[in-house]
Structures are given as C-alpha cells and as structure tokens.
Length: 170
Image 1: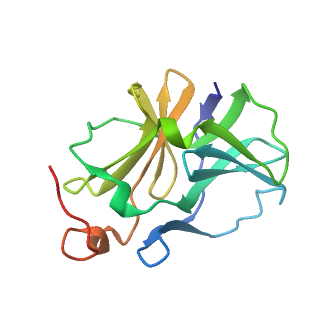
Image 2: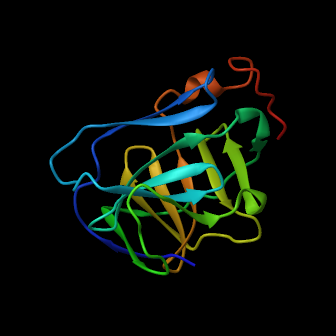
C-alpha cells in the first residue's frame, strides 16, 4: 500500500498524449527547475507514474498500454483537487527503479469515450477521491492510498472507435 500526501500548488507543466503505433502514453514535460533529476516510478499495471526520487513528488504518467486491451464503459465522475502529490508512506524510493503498486494481473483499464478518459485501477477497488498532478494525469485514491490513475491524453480523438481500430463495446 502506497500512501499519498497532497497539497495545493502548481501542477507539472506539459502534455499527455497516446501514440497508437507504439501502444503507449507519453508525457512531454516542460521543465521548470523543480525536479532533482533523480527519478523513480510507481507502476499501476504497465502505466508508470514518474516520481522525483529525492522529494517523492509524483510528476506525471507514461507507459505502454495496448488500447485493444481496454474495456469500454462509463467511468464515474470524481471531483478532484489540483496540486502537488507526494509519496508519504508505504514505499522506499530508489532512483532508477520502478515500484509495483498494482500488479498487471490486478489492474484493469477502462476507456470512457464520452468523457475522453482511460482509467487504470485495481480490480475491486473504487476511488473515493482524485487529485490532478499534471495535464491529463489524475491520481485515484481510496482515502490516501494510491489505487489507480486516470488519463486524458490531448489527442484522445485519435482513440475513438473507427479512428484506431478500437471497438466501442458499451
């Protein structure tokens, strides 16, 4: 279990996108001099949440996720705050390492075409709140425990049925 602390403040600047050919999310970070340069990551299935290895600040998300493996469904709206999130307990960060929060076998990916989001979360757990840390990147929390991430890539239109080979099954 990884606990997350949050506080108001500026989100990481940049843009989240999805490359259909690579089956991957990418975040184009616009550096503002806040990061130590030492990085680790938290893994939600195959999605990585980049973490500053010195401060523990969660920065943005990226990673492989073939859209053919996503289920199509409505995703409940969560009213979340924006700001900065930090690892507060449950894991020792080691620079350059990925730390599995939710194993691939326990993660699910749901795409909501109406809301233009993809939710990656632990099967059987529902978030109680969310927290936006960067454009298109929203942490899913059960109280303060990290249980997933919700992504809204800037190029979502390319993921619509008929555009990418994805079939709408809802």
